[in-house]
Structure formats: structure tokens, C-alpha cells
Image (cartoon, rainbow, N blue to C red; front, top):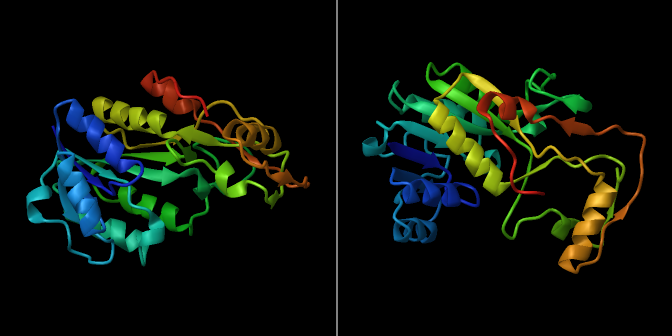
Length: 248
């Protein structure tokens, strides 16, 4: 099969490498010449895409089996317009996997796929473009991402942070890659799924333990009356016979 990954960075590159390892054709975008060379050295058919030019995907990549959109909204002037333009460039036979965020949810407490969302959130507006594109799609709302050298405790170390009693909502990169592969093998569904590890320790408990594990100063937590979110990722597990294998 042929894959195009828009955004071959921290998540997209290891995903591309895994798909290549399994014998697929993989093309992927990056935003710099340096990263372009890195992708090509790993066997990815790489091209530049910065999110600013509306018609910037090379024509030879536009007829693909699966388009995986993993481009961060922070790198776009108007994320919804960018996603709209991007999807219009691909064949109607293309299936889309769009990596979204659980940050689109509006409420607190237990959060599932039926919970209210912030309709004007840039990522939610981009989701709407995917839903209205006419393409087969699956939207994966990812919880906080960890893996490799990336872990939020490194940014919290030694700092005062609030809401220590609220729970964490995290997922490891390895499980996200497995979830994307599961979606691809099952074909696009026209559905939205949360991807979140099922354990939800408190921020105080979790980040204190992780700081000790990494040998760094733990954060100092204050408590508040604000109720946090507890993201439920079990729908994806049920519908795709998926187990979260990499602990947070």
C-alpha cells in the first residue's frame, strides 16, 4: 500500500519507519531541508510542506491509499483552512487518518467521544473539515503524548504547578503508532476515537514518581477546587480489539 504522512516529526517519523519495515511505500513531509535529508536517508520519499502554501503537495503524491495527517496546528496560520486545502488535493479514493487532540473537549469529569466539544477550537474546526471532505476518514483524538525523550515532567521539574489532585491523561507514542496501524488495517470508519492509556493517577502522584525515576527535582503541586478531565479511551479498544501495551 501507499502512504503519505503529513508531518514526519516526533510521531510521524517512527510511524513512517514502521510502515516501511512492513514493506509499504511511504512518502512524508517535513518543514526543513535538514529533516528532508534525514527522511530520505531512512527510505522515506520525502517532500517539503510548511503549512503556509495552499497548493504545496507534489502532484505525484496525491494518488495514495492512505493519508495520515499529523501536522501540528501551532505551525499553521489557519489550521482549518490548511486542512481543507490539503484534503482537496488528494484523490477521492484516499482514506484519511487525522490525528486530533482531546483538548477539543469542553467539559470536566469523565470524557468520552459523546462529550461536548469546543466548536471554535482550531483543532475541532479542522476535524469538521475532515468530516465534510467526502473522503473516508477516522479521527483519533490523542491524549497527552509521551515517549522517547519527551515527557512533561521535564518541563514541570522544580516548578510550582496547580491542580495536583487532577488525574493525568497520557498515551505513549508506541501505542499511538499501533492504534494508527490498527485503523489502517480495519479501513476508515467515519468515526472519532479517543486514544488514552486507561490508568489515571493524580498529577501529584504521577509526576512526583516520574521525577524520582528520572533523577530530577519533582514539581511542587498546589490543590484547587477545579475538577479535571478523565479521558476514556475504551471505545477504540472495544471496536478494534486494541490493548494499550506501553505503560505511561
